Length: 339
Image (spheres, rainbow, N blue to C red):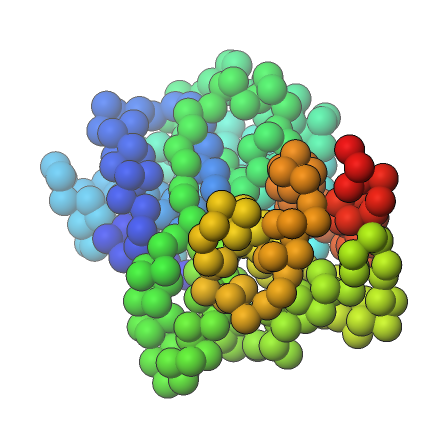
């Protein structure tokens, strides 16, 4: 679990924060709120800051007062604050959910409410989801659930219908630049600009790129995507060169973001406009604009969404990249071009 940051320090999520304040201002003391949106955009940071306010037992509107027991106790040690995270496992099973629910059966010990934070709830097994759903259908008094996920479409529809939903959006380039200058003030401006471009709106991914930059990641993406020539000819040597970096999680996510922007660049070229800045020196936007029919480019946008879900679930990314080569091949193959 991350360290604590004041709610006022959460950047670029004014609408989400306002919605959360609106939900909680009515005196909500039981139920479940889903914070959803891309990884690394402030969902957990906002939840921890809200938990600090809600758990405060100080007078009036002073929360967090900074003086009561709750405010002086780290959330990780707070008796009324409980966290369930998947850790290194692929899923969250029913035993973990049952244990969390057991811990929250009693009335709050020192605060007005108990809070349960469930991170990455898209990893709940069906049995665990149903166990949590039963608890939400028969809510305990003074028990608030905060559920976090980048992929709410993976939740059971019955569970999703029980949640108040608050969307967290990708961060703007301005917010990302401010974050990285504040957190990594000594980084070279040209490296920061490149990292912002490849971050996909995620502050978490941005800081990872700054701290451990991939070897020219956009070049690796261009190498991989350019390995598929007109009429379906594949340069397997180029694929092999780029493959290892892009099959890792960070490289895989950069690949998806960069490919999405390449498709947008191709659409711009098809409409007589220039590509997006990072693709202006590449021949790929024109290739994708003129070789690929519009409806197949649209289908690739759908495939990107499917690949993002694969990434969230830690499924074999190398295999996904191999399949993706085949999907891209449909655009450039003679059969695809004749459709």
